[in-house]
Image (cartoon, rainbow, N blue to C red; front, side, top):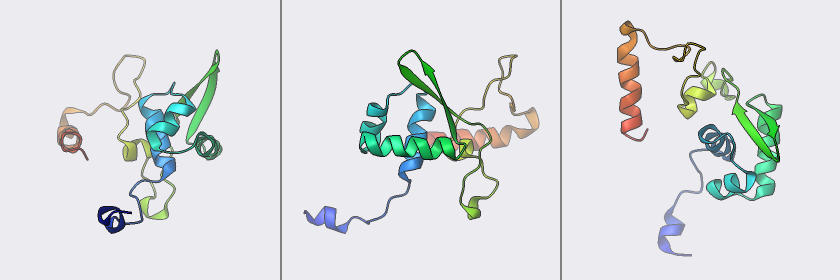
Length: 127
């Protein structure tokens, strides 16, 4: 093992569950094989995580031909007590679901422009 590998911390910032959910949020039709590759996990580990996320109410799955189509359930909250009330969609910075009129369901009003600007700044800075 190299010195650089030994000096790296042994913990990671995101859990495997968060990584899997993030990949699905970006591509609801993604295959388990591709999730595994993106998250550096085995397919078996991804399948177990998908069961956890579905059982926990964080995502739904439906069949479309031979493929699964996943959907992150809107409004589900992060599980840790310190994050009580924080939506998973906010943690993953997911786009708001569109209303039938074609606009975001909770589109910011003129008086909330500062909140939207702050969100864009976080996105531009990679955070």
